Length: 86
Length: 196
Image (cartoon, rainbow over all chains, first blue to last red; front, side):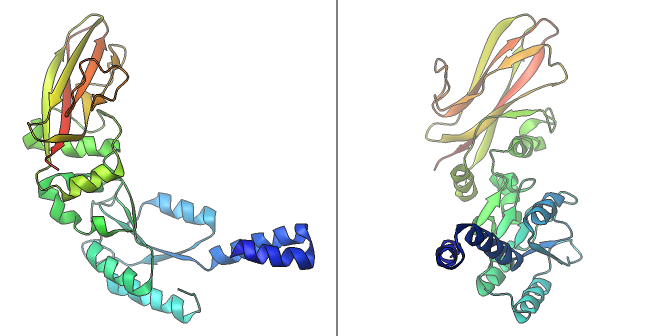
């Protein structure tokens, strides 16, 4: 997808701006992603997500500290309603 | 979605089958972080706790990690309490081996202790699976790793694939130890077996 954008943009903008365009497209794609974890998830995941620029959604846990699936479904529904695509 | 099979803090396991269904409905990728807990799936008594692990889109925490050694042999029945976590040196195991281990209802662990004498002489020990079974992997542990100046060399080998094929076993795990001067040590060689 990005390569296609780059090819079309290169014709219009020239190679340097096309590269910038591609980079922005990637950033835009990553910014649209969301990652779901719980409060018990290992902190290394947080770190990776921060570096990548992916949005982190922390889902509540139940009494046994297991991720609550109903809360996950609700969070995903929120994100879909906010326009985040499948 | 990043689920956890065995959290670092408490060892809790997220409801993997339910998460799988939710992720299917929403077209989400399901990753299971099993760096701490997943290797326990090779133990029959833990398999039920980790149901759904095999259904993830991706996993980490294969039995190639040192964790499997600790999990597999810290079981009191198997190790007699003689092996402590963090004292395990491991060889390579592959993700497909974990799959086989998860599916194998007959996966078991065999181990043997052997004496490493004082002085710079090599000793070796092999632990083989029962006839008709093959080794998924194994490992070697020493009574103490703080005696690093005494146990100077170990060579885990499996499947005859080690550089030094002499003495290697086809369906087991072995170690060769060259012990330095000092008191006698005990080493444990263990192997995970399956009939599959």
